[in-house]
Image 1: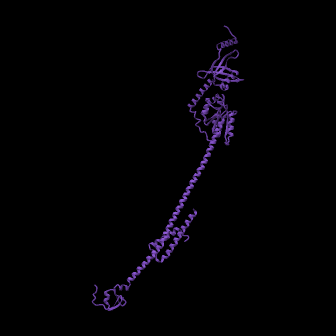
Image 2: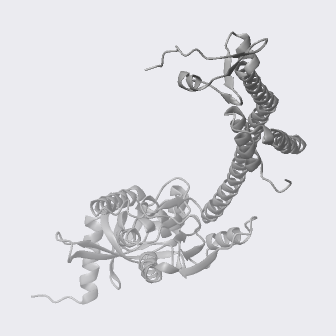
Image 3: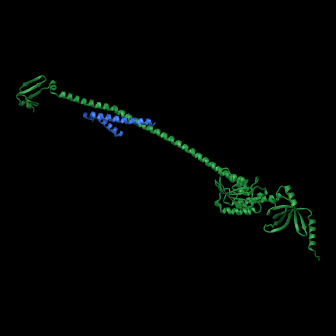
Length: 59
Length: 415
Protein backbone atom coordinates (compact mmCIF):
# COMPACT_ATOMS: atom_id res chain seq x y z
CA UNK A 1 0.00 0.00 0.00
CA UNK A 2 2.84 2.40 0.82
CA UNK A 3 4.27 2.09 -2.70
CA UNK A 4 0.93 2.75 -4.29
CA UNK A 5 0.48 5.95 -6.31
CA UNK A 6 -2.32 8.31 -5.55
CA UNK A 7 -3.53 7.85 -9.09
CA UNK A 8 -3.84 4.08 -8.82
CA UNK A 9 -5.42 4.28 -5.39
CA UNK A 10 -8.02 6.71 -6.70
CA UNK A 11 -8.75 4.52 -9.74
CA UNK A 12 -9.33 1.46 -7.56
CA UNK A 13 -11.51 3.46 -5.18
CA UNK A 14 -13.59 4.78 -8.07
CA UNK A 15 -13.97 1.23 -9.45
CA UNK A 16 -15.26 -0.07 -6.11
CA UNK A 17 -17.69 2.84 -5.75
CA UNK A 18 -18.87 2.27 -9.29
CA UNK A 19 -19.41 -1.44 -8.61
CA UNK A 20 -21.36 -0.59 -5.49
CA UNK A 21 -23.54 1.81 -7.43
CA UNK A 22 -24.18 -0.79 -10.12
CA UNK A 23 -24.85 -3.40 -7.39
CA UNK A 24 -22.22 -5.62 -8.83
CA UNK A 25 -20.66 -6.36 -5.48
CA UNK A 26 -21.73 -9.67 -3.98
CA UNK A 27 -22.69 -9.64 -0.33
CA UNK A 28 -19.85 -12.07 0.34
CA UNK A 29 -17.38 -9.47 -0.94
CA UNK A 30 -19.19 -6.47 0.48
CA UNK A 31 -17.26 -6.27 3.75
CA UNK A 32 -13.91 -6.80 2.08
CA UNK A 33 -14.65 -4.26 -0.66
CA UNK A 34 -15.95 -1.69 1.83
CA UNK A 35 -12.86 -2.12 3.99
CA UNK A 36 -10.62 -1.80 0.95
CA UNK A 37 -12.43 1.35 -0.16
CA UNK A 38 -12.02 2.89 3.31
CA UNK A 39 -8.35 2.01 3.26
CA UNK A 40 -7.87 3.64 -0.15
CA UNK A 41 -9.74 6.75 0.94
CA UNK A 42 -7.54 7.12 4.02
CA UNK A 43 -4.46 6.63 1.94
CA UNK A 44 -5.49 9.30 -0.57
CA UNK A 45 -6.48 11.77 2.11
CA UNK A 46 -3.19 11.21 3.90
CA UNK A 47 -1.32 12.01 0.70
CA UNK A 48 -3.29 15.21 0.19
CA UNK A 49 -2.71 16.30 3.78
CA UNK A 50 1.00 15.75 3.24
CA UNK A 51 0.96 17.93 0.13
CA UNK A 52 -1.00 20.66 1.88
CA UNK A 53 1.37 20.67 4.79
CA UNK A 54 4.41 20.97 2.51
CA UNK A 55 2.71 23.81 0.65
CA UNK A 56 2.24 25.75 3.86
CA UNK A 57 5.75 25.07 5.12
CA UNK A 58 7.26 26.29 1.84
CA UNK A 59 5.34 29.53 2.04
CA UNK B 1 78.92 115.81 -84.58
CA UNK B 2 79.90 116.22 -80.95
CA UNK B 3 80.98 113.30 -78.76
CA UNK B 4 80.42 113.30 -74.96
CA UNK B 5 82.11 111.44 -72.21
CA UNK B 6 79.94 109.01 -70.21
CA UNK B 7 80.13 111.16 -67.11
CA UNK B 8 79.14 114.17 -69.15
CA UNK B 9 76.11 112.26 -70.50
CA UNK B 10 75.11 111.02 -67.05
CA UNK B 11 75.48 114.47 -65.58
CA UNK B 12 73.17 115.68 -68.31
CA UNK B 13 70.61 112.89 -67.63
CA UNK B 14 70.76 113.66 -63.88
CA UNK B 15 69.93 117.29 -64.58
CA UNK B 16 67.08 116.32 -66.94
CA UNK B 17 65.64 113.95 -64.35
CA UNK B 18 66.02 116.43 -61.50
CA UNK B 19 64.46 119.22 -63.55
CA UNK B 20 61.54 117.17 -64.87
CA UNK B 21 60.77 115.20 -61.74
CA UNK B 22 61.38 117.69 -58.95
CA UNK B 23 58.53 116.30 -56.80
CA UNK B 24 58.12 112.76 -55.47
CA UNK B 25 55.65 110.59 -57.44
CA UNK B 26 53.43 107.62 -56.55
CA UNK B 27 54.18 104.47 -58.50
CA UNK B 28 52.65 100.99 -58.58
CA UNK B 29 54.72 97.85 -59.10
CA UNK B 30 55.21 94.24 -58.13
CA UNK B 31 58.03 93.34 -55.76
CA UNK B 32 60.39 90.85 -57.35
CA UNK B 33 63.05 90.79 -54.71
CA UNK B 34 63.48 92.22 -51.25
CA UNK B 35 66.90 92.45 -49.68
CA UNK B 36 67.30 93.87 -46.22
CA UNK B 37 70.77 94.91 -45.05
CA UNK B 38 71.46 96.85 -41.87
CA UNK B 39 67.95 98.25 -41.84
CA UNK B 40 68.02 99.37 -45.48
CA UNK B 41 65.64 97.66 -47.88
CA UNK B 42 66.85 97.11 -51.44
CA UNK B 43 63.92 96.33 -53.71
CA UNK B 44 63.60 95.01 -57.24
CA UNK B 45 60.39 96.26 -58.87
CA UNK B 46 58.67 95.26 -62.08
CA UNK B 47 55.51 95.53 -64.08
CA UNK B 48 54.30 92.63 -66.14
CA UNK B 49 53.14 92.90 -69.71
CA UNK B 50 49.44 92.89 -70.47
CA UNK B 51 49.43 89.11 -70.94
CA UNK B 52 51.08 88.70 -67.56
CA UNK B 53 53.93 86.63 -68.99
CA UNK B 54 56.71 88.99 -69.82
CA UNK B 55 58.35 91.84 -68.01
CA UNK B 56 57.26 95.23 -69.29
CA UNK B 57 59.42 97.38 -66.98
CA UNK B 58 61.75 97.00 -64.05
CA UNK B 59 63.62 99.23 -61.66
CA UNK B 60 65.60 99.22 -58.45
CA UNK B 61 64.42 101.02 -55.37
CA UNK B 62 65.77 101.58 -51.91
CA UNK B 63 64.14 102.33 -48.60
CA UNK B 64 66.66 103.84 -46.29
CA UNK B 65 66.76 102.66 -42.72
CA UNK B 66 65.80 106.07 -41.31
CA UNK B 67 62.70 106.33 -43.52
CA UNK B 68 61.80 102.71 -42.73
CA UNK B 69 61.90 103.27 -38.98
CA UNK B 70 59.82 106.44 -39.18
CA UNK B 71 57.29 104.77 -41.45
CA UNK B 72 56.87 101.77 -39.15
CA UNK B 73 56.32 104.07 -36.17
CA UNK B 74 53.65 106.03 -38.01
CA UNK B 75 51.76 103.15 -39.59
CA UNK B 76 52.22 100.44 -36.94
CA UNK B 77 52.75 97.88 -39.69
CA UNK B 78 55.79 95.65 -39.88
CA UNK B 79 57.70 96.26 -43.08
CA UNK B 80 58.86 92.67 -43.20
CA UNK B 81 55.31 91.55 -43.71
CA UNK B 82 54.46 94.17 -46.29
CA UNK B 83 57.63 93.95 -48.33
CA UNK B 84 57.59 90.43 -49.66
CA UNK B 85 58.37 89.12 -53.09
CA UNK B 86 55.22 88.76 -55.18
CA UNK B 87 53.30 91.54 -53.47
CA UNK B 88 51.80 94.49 -55.27
CA UNK B 89 52.96 97.74 -53.73
CA UNK B 90 52.19 101.43 -54.14
CA UNK B 91 55.21 103.54 -53.31
CA UNK B 92 55.93 107.21 -53.13
CA UNK B 93 59.36 107.61 -54.70
CA UNK B 94 61.89 110.23 -55.56
CA UNK B 95 63.52 109.43 -58.86
CA UNK B 96 67.28 109.77 -58.59
CA UNK B 97 69.85 109.35 -61.23
CA UNK B 98 73.40 108.90 -60.08
CA UNK B 99 76.27 109.14 -62.44
CA UNK B 100 77.92 106.07 -60.97
CA UNK B 101 74.94 103.87 -59.96
CA UNK B 102 72.40 104.77 -62.59
CA UNK B 103 68.73 105.22 -61.90
CA UNK B 104 67.34 104.44 -58.47
CA UNK B 105 64.00 105.11 -56.83
CA UNK B 106 64.18 106.29 -53.26
CA UNK B 107 61.12 105.25 -51.31
CA UNK B 108 59.63 107.97 -49.12
CA UNK B 109 56.24 106.49 -48.30
CA UNK B 110 54.14 103.44 -48.94
CA UNK B 111 50.37 102.83 -49.08
CA UNK B 112 49.77 99.61 -47.14
CA UNK B 113 46.06 99.66 -47.94
CA UNK B 114 46.86 99.19 -51.63
CA UNK B 115 48.86 96.06 -50.90
CA UNK B 116 46.20 94.81 -48.54
CA UNK B 117 43.50 95.50 -51.12
CA UNK B 118 45.44 93.57 -53.71
CA UNK B 119 45.84 90.72 -51.27
CA UNK B 120 42.12 90.77 -50.51
CA UNK B 121 41.38 90.52 -54.22
CA UNK B 122 43.77 87.64 -54.68
CA UNK B 123 42.25 86.03 -51.65
CA UNK B 124 38.75 86.30 -53.14
CA UNK B 125 40.01 84.79 -56.41
CA UNK B 126 41.46 81.87 -54.48
CA UNK B 127 38.21 81.35 -52.57
CA UNK B 128 36.19 81.48 -55.80
CA UNK B 129 38.53 78.99 -57.47
CA UNK B 130 38.33 76.60 -54.50
CA UNK B 131 34.53 76.80 -54.49
CA UNK B 132 34.40 76.22 -58.22
CA UNK B 133 36.55 73.11 -57.75
CA UNK B 134 34.27 71.96 -54.92
CA UNK B 135 37.19 71.95 -52.50
CA UNK B 136 35.95 74.46 -49.93
CA UNK B 137 33.89 71.84 -48.06
CA UNK B 138 35.91 68.74 -48.95
CA UNK B 139 37.97 68.62 -45.77
CA UNK B 140 35.00 69.43 -43.56
CA UNK B 141 33.18 66.41 -44.96
CA UNK B 142 35.95 64.08 -43.81
CA UNK B 143 35.28 62.11 -40.67
CA UNK B 144 37.47 63.14 -37.75
CA UNK B 145 38.00 59.91 -35.77
CA UNK B 146 36.31 59.78 -32.38
CA UNK B 147 39.71 59.35 -30.80
CA UNK B 148 42.25 61.40 -32.78
CA UNK B 149 45.47 60.27 -31.15
CA UNK B 150 47.89 59.84 -34.05
CA UNK B 151 48.76 63.30 -35.25
CA UNK B 152 50.88 64.63 -38.08
CA UNK B 153 51.89 68.19 -37.21
CA UNK B 154 53.20 70.82 -39.60
CA UNK B 155 54.94 73.57 -37.68
CA UNK B 156 58.19 75.36 -37.32
CA UNK B 157 60.13 73.37 -34.71
CA UNK B 158 61.48 76.61 -33.22
CA UNK B 159 58.09 78.30 -32.91
CA UNK B 160 56.65 78.96 -29.47
CA UNK B 161 53.35 77.56 -30.74
CA UNK B 162 54.91 74.13 -31.26
CA UNK B 163 56.21 74.13 -27.69
CA UNK B 164 52.81 75.21 -26.34
CA UNK B 165 51.12 72.46 -28.33
CA UNK B 166 53.34 69.57 -27.23
CA UNK B 167 53.45 70.73 -23.61
CA UNK B 168 49.69 71.05 -23.44
CA UNK B 169 49.17 67.57 -24.93
CA UNK B 170 51.81 65.93 -22.74
CA UNK B 171 50.55 67.48 -19.53
CA UNK B 172 46.87 66.77 -20.02
CA UNK B 173 45.46 65.89 -16.59
CA UNK B 174 43.68 62.73 -17.79
CA UNK B 175 46.82 60.95 -18.93
CA UNK B 176 45.69 60.52 -22.52
CA UNK B 177 48.44 59.39 -24.87
CA UNK B 178 49.03 61.20 -28.12
CA UNK B 179 51.50 60.19 -30.78
CA UNK B 180 52.78 63.34 -32.46
CA UNK B 181 55.02 63.45 -35.55
CA UNK B 182 56.45 66.83 -36.45
CA UNK B 183 56.85 67.73 -40.10
CA UNK B 184 58.96 70.86 -39.92
CA UNK B 185 58.27 73.68 -42.36
CA UNK B 186 58.54 77.44 -42.51
CA UNK B 187 55.12 78.74 -41.53
CA UNK B 188 55.57 82.29 -42.72
CA UNK B 189 57.24 84.14 -45.51
CA UNK B 190 57.88 83.15 -49.09
CA UNK B 191 59.19 79.69 -48.15
CA UNK B 192 56.02 78.75 -46.27
CA UNK B 193 53.93 77.64 -49.23
CA UNK B 194 56.50 75.37 -50.97
CA UNK B 195 57.75 73.86 -47.72
CA UNK B 196 54.29 73.17 -46.32
CA UNK B 197 53.15 71.71 -49.65
CA UNK B 198 56.14 69.36 -49.68
CA UNK B 199 55.23 68.12 -46.17
CA UNK B 200 51.57 67.77 -47.16
CA UNK B 201 52.61 65.42 -49.96
CA UNK B 202 54.79 63.39 -47.57
CA UNK B 203 51.99 63.13 -45.01
CA UNK B 204 49.45 62.14 -47.64
CA UNK B 205 51.70 59.20 -48.58
CA UNK B 206 51.70 58.06 -44.93
CA UNK B 207 48.03 58.85 -44.58
CA UNK B 208 47.11 55.58 -42.83
CA UNK B 209 49.53 56.32 -39.98
CA UNK B 210 47.47 59.31 -38.84
CA UNK B 211 44.05 60.30 -37.56
CA UNK B 212 44.40 64.01 -38.24
CA UNK B 213 46.69 66.67 -39.61
CA UNK B 214 47.50 69.62 -37.39
CA UNK B 215 48.91 72.87 -38.81
CA UNK B 216 50.08 75.32 -36.16
CA UNK B 217 52.27 78.33 -35.55
CA UNK B 218 52.52 81.22 -33.12
CA UNK B 219 50.64 84.49 -33.48
CA UNK B 220 51.17 87.02 -36.24
CA UNK B 221 49.98 90.26 -37.74
CA UNK B 222 47.24 90.73 -40.28
CA UNK B 223 49.57 90.34 -43.23
CA UNK B 224 51.04 87.14 -41.89
CA UNK B 225 47.72 85.50 -42.40
CA UNK B 226 48.20 85.98 -46.14
CA UNK B 227 50.70 83.11 -46.08
CA UNK B 228 47.79 80.77 -45.54
CA UNK B 229 45.71 82.43 -48.24
CA UNK B 230 48.24 81.40 -50.85
CA UNK B 231 46.44 79.69 -53.69
CA UNK B 232 48.64 76.67 -54.31
CA UNK B 233 48.95 75.94 -50.60
CA UNK B 234 45.19 76.14 -50.14
CA UNK B 235 44.54 73.80 -53.07
CA UNK B 236 47.08 71.32 -51.74
CA UNK B 237 45.55 71.40 -48.26
CA UNK B 238 41.99 71.09 -49.58
CA UNK B 239 42.99 67.96 -51.46
CA UNK B 240 44.23 66.17 -48.32
CA UNK B 241 42.38 63.05 -47.25
CA UNK B 242 43.17 63.65 -43.56
CA UNK B 243 41.00 66.04 -41.58
CA UNK B 244 42.93 69.24 -40.92
CA UNK B 245 42.90 71.00 -37.57
CA UNK B 246 44.40 74.48 -37.86
CA UNK B 247 45.77 76.65 -35.11
CA UNK B 248 47.62 79.33 -36.97
CA UNK B 249 47.19 81.96 -34.38
CA UNK B 250 44.96 84.81 -35.33
CA UNK B 251 42.38 86.33 -33.09
CA UNK B 252 40.18 88.32 -35.45
CA UNK B 253 40.50 87.00 -38.99
CA UNK B 254 40.44 83.67 -40.67
CA UNK B 255 42.81 82.59 -43.40
CA UNK B 256 41.50 80.56 -46.32
CA UNK B 257 43.26 77.55 -44.82
CA UNK B 258 41.15 78.05 -41.67
CA UNK B 259 38.03 78.30 -43.81
CA UNK B 260 38.61 75.01 -45.56
CA UNK B 261 40.06 73.12 -42.60
CA UNK B 262 37.96 70.49 -40.86
CA UNK B 263 38.30 72.39 -37.59
CA UNK B 264 39.78 75.89 -37.29
CA UNK B 265 41.05 77.05 -33.93
CA UNK B 266 42.86 80.19 -32.94
CA UNK B 267 46.01 78.95 -31.23
CA UNK B 268 48.14 75.80 -30.93
CA UNK B 269 47.05 75.56 -27.30
CA UNK B 270 43.43 75.64 -28.41
CA UNK B 271 44.13 72.75 -30.81
CA UNK B 272 45.67 70.72 -27.99
CA UNK B 273 42.70 71.45 -25.74
CA UNK B 274 40.29 70.53 -28.52
CA UNK B 275 41.96 67.13 -28.91
CA UNK B 276 42.04 66.53 -25.15
CA UNK B 277 38.38 67.58 -24.81
CA UNK B 278 37.38 65.23 -27.60
CA UNK B 279 38.96 62.31 -25.77
CA UNK B 280 37.48 63.47 -22.50
CA UNK B 281 34.05 63.77 -24.11
CA UNK B 282 34.24 60.22 -25.41
CA UNK B 283 35.51 59.04 -22.05
CA UNK B 284 32.55 60.60 -20.30
CA UNK B 285 30.17 59.26 -22.90
CA UNK B 286 31.53 55.77 -22.30
CA UNK B 287 31.16 56.19 -18.56
CA UNK B 288 27.57 57.31 -19.12
CA UNK B 289 26.89 54.30 -21.33
CA UNK B 290 28.37 51.98 -18.71
CA UNK B 291 26.12 53.51 -16.07
CA UNK B 292 23.03 53.24 -18.26
CA UNK B 293 23.96 49.65 -19.02
CA UNK B 294 24.15 48.85 -15.33
CA UNK B 295 20.83 50.55 -14.63
CA UNK B 296 19.22 48.69 -17.47
CA UNK B 297 20.62 45.43 -16.13
CA UNK B 298 19.17 46.09 -12.70
CA UNK B 299 15.82 47.02 -14.22
CA UNK B 300 15.70 43.83 -16.30
CA UNK B 301 16.70 41.70 -13.32
CA UNK B 302 13.97 43.28 -11.21
CA UNK B 303 11.39 42.73 -13.92
CA UNK B 304 12.47 39.10 -14.29
CA UNK B 305 12.35 38.48 -10.59
CA UNK B 306 8.88 40.03 -10.36
CA UNK B 307 7.81 37.77 -13.19
CA UNK B 308 9.25 34.72 -11.43
CA UNK B 309 7.46 35.67 -8.24
CA UNK B 310 4.21 35.95 -10.13
CA UNK B 311 4.77 32.58 -11.79
CA UNK B 312 5.61 31.04 -8.42
CA UNK B 313 2.40 32.45 -7.00
CA UNK B 314 0.40 31.09 -9.92
CA UNK B 315 2.06 27.72 -9.45
CA UNK B 316 1.19 27.63 -5.76
CA UNK B 317 -2.37 28.63 -6.38
CA UNK B 318 -2.77 26.07 -9.18
CA UNK B 319 -1.37 23.39 -6.92
CA UNK B 320 -3.61 24.50 -4.10
CA UNK B 321 -6.61 24.31 -6.39
CA UNK B 322 -5.68 20.88 -7.60
CA UNK B 323 -5.21 19.55 -4.08
CA UNK B 324 -8.48 21.13 -2.98
CA UNK B 325 -10.38 19.60 -5.88
CA UNK B 326 -8.95 16.21 -5.03
CA UNK B 327 -9.76 16.63 -1.35
CA UNK B 328 -13.29 17.60 -2.21
CA UNK B 329 -13.68 14.54 -4.40
CA UNK B 330 -12.30 12.29 -1.71
CA UNK B 331 -14.80 13.75 0.74
CA UNK B 332 -17.56 13.00 -1.72
CA UNK B 333 -16.32 9.45 -1.95
CA UNK B 334 -16.06 9.18 1.82
CA UNK B 335 -19.72 10.16 2.21
CA UNK B 336 -20.74 8.00 -0.71
CA UNK B 337 -19.02 4.87 0.51
CA UNK B 338 -21.12 4.12 3.67
CA UNK B 339 -24.27 5.16 1.82
CA UNK B 340 -23.51 2.80 -1.01
CA UNK B 341 -22.61 -0.03 1.36
CA UNK B 342 -25.78 0.38 3.42
CA UNK B 343 -27.80 0.74 0.24
CA UNK B 344 -26.36 -2.50 -1.00
CA UNK B 345 -27.16 -4.15 2.31
CA UNK B 346 -30.69 -2.80 2.29
CA UNK B 347 -31.26 -4.05 -1.24
CA UNK B 348 -29.98 -7.50 -0.23
CA UNK B 349 -32.31 -7.46 2.81
CA UNK B 350 -35.23 -6.45 0.62
CA UNK B 351 -34.48 -9.30 -1.70
CA UNK B 352 -34.46 -11.72 1.20
CA UNK B 353 -37.77 -10.32 2.42
CA UNK B 354 -39.24 -10.85 -1.00
CA UNK B 355 -38.04 -14.40 -1.07
CA UNK B 356 -39.50 -14.97 2.37
CA UNK B 357 -42.87 -13.57 1.30
CA UNK B 358 -42.89 -15.59 -1.87
CA UNK B 359 -41.96 -18.63 0.06
CA UNK B 360 -44.74 -18.05 2.51
CA UNK B 361 -47.19 -17.40 -0.30
CA UNK B 362 -46.28 -20.60 -2.00
CA UNK B 363 -46.31 -22.80 1.13
CA UNK B 364 -49.06 -25.54 1.44
CA UNK B 365 -50.76 -24.33 4.62
CA UNK B 366 -51.09 -20.86 3.15
CA UNK B 367 -52.55 -22.30 -0.03
CA UNK B 368 -55.03 -24.40 1.93
CA UNK B 369 -55.93 -21.34 4.01
CA UNK B 370 -56.84 -19.48 0.90
CA UNK B 371 -59.39 -22.19 0.10
CA UNK B 372 -57.42 -24.49 -2.18
CA UNK B 373 -57.54 -28.23 -1.57
CA UNK B 374 -54.89 -30.85 -2.25
CA UNK B 375 -55.92 -34.21 -3.54
CA UNK B 376 -53.59 -37.13 -3.01
CA UNK B 377 -53.53 -40.83 -3.21
CA UNK B 378 -50.94 -42.32 -0.94
CA UNK B 379 -47.78 -40.29 -1.50
CA UNK B 380 -48.87 -39.10 -4.88
CA UNK B 381 -50.46 -35.72 -5.45
CA UNK B 382 -53.17 -35.85 -8.06
CA UNK B 383 -53.43 -32.93 -10.33
CA UNK B 384 -55.70 -34.21 -13.16
CA UNK B 385 -59.10 -35.86 -13.53
CA UNK B 386 -57.56 -38.64 -15.51
CA UNK B 387 -55.34 -39.56 -12.61
CA UNK B 388 -58.27 -39.18 -10.25
CA UNK B 389 -60.46 -41.48 -12.28
CA UNK B 390 -57.99 -44.31 -11.85
CA UNK B 391 -58.10 -44.11 -8.04
CA UNK B 392 -60.46 -45.90 -5.75
CA UNK B 393 -59.57 -43.96 -2.66
CA UNK B 394 -58.30 -40.50 -2.42
CA UNK B 395 -57.37 -38.18 0.38
CA UNK B 396 -58.46 -34.52 0.33
CA UNK B 397 -56.42 -32.11 2.36
CA UNK B 398 -58.09 -28.92 3.68
CA UNK B 399 -56.83 -26.16 5.98
CA UNK B 400 -58.05 -27.84 9.13
CA UNK B 401 -57.58 -31.54 8.35
CA UNK B 402 -57.90 -34.38 5.83
CA UNK B 403 -60.78 -36.54 4.71
CA UNK B 404 -60.95 -39.78 2.69
CA UNK B 405 -63.16 -39.90 -0.32
CA UNK B 406 -64.17 -42.16 -3.21
CA UNK B 407 -64.20 -40.55 -6.61
CA UNK B 408 -67.54 -40.60 -8.37
CA UNK B 409 -67.68 -42.67 -11.52
CA UNK B 410 -69.72 -40.12 -13.28
CA UNK B 411 -67.02 -37.71 -13.40
CA UNK B 412 -66.91 -36.83 -17.04
CA UNK B 413 -63.61 -37.23 -18.73
CA UNK B 414 -62.08 -34.13 -20.01
CA UNK B 415 -61.80 -34.14 -23.70
